[in-house]
Image (cartoon, rainbow, N blue to C red; front, side, top):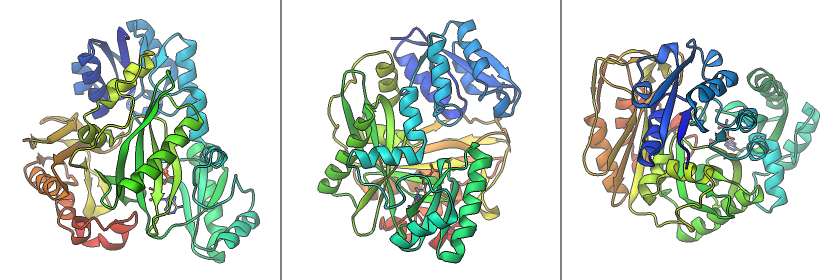
Length: 449
Ligand code: ADP
């Protein structure tokens, strides 16, 4: 095992990794920007290093500063968390070149899955179903049109380098296509410095169902069941749950097998997630693989009892996974992301000082947060301030627990999405589990007020 791990991240995930390290007897190093001086991850780590000014490009994204911080503090491994440099192959390479273990997959695995069109090709070659579409990038509107006509409208133009919902545009008809193509391409170029795009059939009412994967360097690759992340706004997840409300043992076996096949195609090592779309007719398709720990990982932790971050540390240290097959899933888990945002104002961020902070608790309630009374939510980063996760014997009990937990989660000083989430837990469609990725946009207008 490592002696000291540097966490190249901030917020709740930095705390999450510190806890896992502590439990394993591993020392920790926090890095922080000038805006995060008062953060809990700085206080709870054994060592800390300021790596620059507030903007992420001057601090959390500066590879040389992170490597220097690791060298100065004698860290022998770096955990990247999620976001920032977590899926940056160059960072993984630089760590290796500096004699520091990157806690994650190999640069090659990150690269293959980071390029959506390359990932699609790898899946096709290994017999994993992908959304019908162009086998590789398309170079012109005419080429996109050829594919669109072959599959039928609507289609979605996607950036090969895409992520975080950027560089995606839907085209409903021929007229739309030219515009969507240009916009997707321009957005991809400015967000990722790579204008490569491809075309996919656009599914009308799919569910987003993803499988948690763990792989080690001893040849084991397993899945740990699914998470349904269909409640989204602008392709960003707001609520996740497990099991998926429409899952059956047979469907889980088939989707899980496809997910493992996809991960095995690149000999995946570490924690990763295979994201799939489950169509209304029961067909499912590989969408992408995220090569990192995800925001919603506690859902899987609570339903399986497996500590995913500790598994990441074990695997990176060359040890075997603590489990060799898919663990049992017990009960039902729901996670809500609490953001400092104003739903009535188009989810505009609401940074500022948190004056009152009271967390819910009780049997089967978990809160992952870096916030506290007196904490200033900085305007520079993601606006998520807490994750609230509840575990019930069944979905009805989990829903009841979530309603109560949201009711007793008191945050004053900044506007949060808690009231919105509370209303969502009472929405008839959500209560019956009858949702799809466009549910909020099409039927959730009342919830935002
Ligand atoms: P990102 O990497 O930016 O998160 P994804 O490829 O994971 O992008 O897609 C994010 C979301 O976009 C999905 O969860 C789904 O809601 C929607 N989406 C992506 N591809 C399709 C498609 N072919 N049909 C319908 N919805 C899609």
